[in-house]
Amino acid sequence: MRTLTAFPVLSPSDFLGSSAPYGFPVSQTSRVSYWYGARTAIRQGLAQIGIRPGDRVLVPAYACGSEVDTLLKCGCVLEYYRILQDMSPDLTHVVDLCRSPARAIFVTHYFGFPQPMDTIMAMARAQGLLVFEDNAHGLFSTDEQGRPLGSVGDLAVMSFTKALPLPDGGALVVNRPVEPQEVLVQRQRPHPLRVAGRMKYLIEFALARRYPTLVRNVKRLVLDPAIRVLKTMEGQAKALPAVAHAQARERAFFEFKAERGSWTMSACSQYLLRRGLPHDVVVQRRRRNYQTVFGALQEGTRVRPLYRTFPPGCSPLFFPILAAELAGLRQYLTARGIESHRFGFFHESIPTKGFPFEESLKEQVLGLPLHQGLGDEDMVYLAGLLNDWNMNRVATAA
Image (spheres, rainbow, N blue to C red):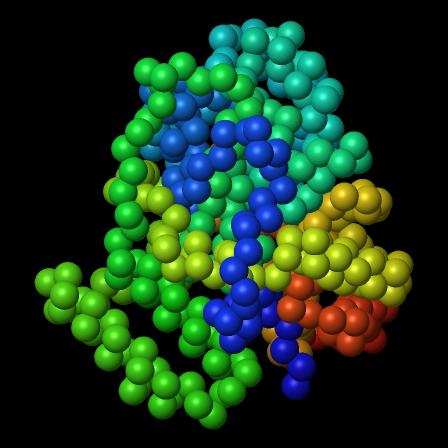
């Protein structure tokens, strides 16, 4: 059975490729720093931009949850704003919220699709707001003017691990002058066990899909002993504690952990980042895969694309769809080898009252795989499954 993973899978070429610059799309004149992940970059960005505990920050009500948890644990007071049918901020609502003093607005480029940053920036300047671009989904995306996402707001965060097979990594981009006393200079290397654990997972994940018969032996003879050695060196004889329930595991995955607030990107991720595919190849493949599915998808009542247009510079994280029967569709796709991704944990602090559209998105939006490791045949297979589901040619997920 064909298998389509939601995220790119590590391959031997990721280790053996020739070293090259990061190919990071943001202008070299910007202040770019590299951190353990997007959550660490948010924590560092708040300090660098001068946002302090107690400051009020405006955040979209349709949010992942990890950014919300980070902002709250950094002491921000959050106010949630609506988004429109085209997934852009409801600026009328934002202006209304600015009747009470606010320091910043958090803007999310959902799934790598660009927000109208010029309009948002004009509103923010008029209201005295700093603009924080959340570009965790659009590492290599540009807007219609060819500007990399994350290069327009006062500051932005990126995530490498969503678009590339790395154990960790994110970036903070600061696009405005920063006073020296505002800069948080504390930097620490990430815990080696955490990096090793993530690397172990990536290797096992890749082996399980490419060479399933080798997985047990490699895990038993190579990976598990290596982790035990590292734990012994760190004075930890026992494995990291397991979380009993699925919901608790999901919550833990999206939580901001304060001890990681100054962790930099690991040397392992830096090594892999320099040897991965050039970013223009990643963009080309993702765009082609998106267009293949979009062009083959038939209109129906059960599934439709979240976006009706495909901007020229967009490098999408997923193929996002609206599914009227999301749970059933996920089971149907999983049974046929298709991994899917729901957007975030949806933090309990996000209110439901007054946000019916955002609530409907939480129940209907699903991200489908189209990463650079997939090709035309994979996308045709995916589109065919969606069409069968859409045209009611399959009654159940079984």
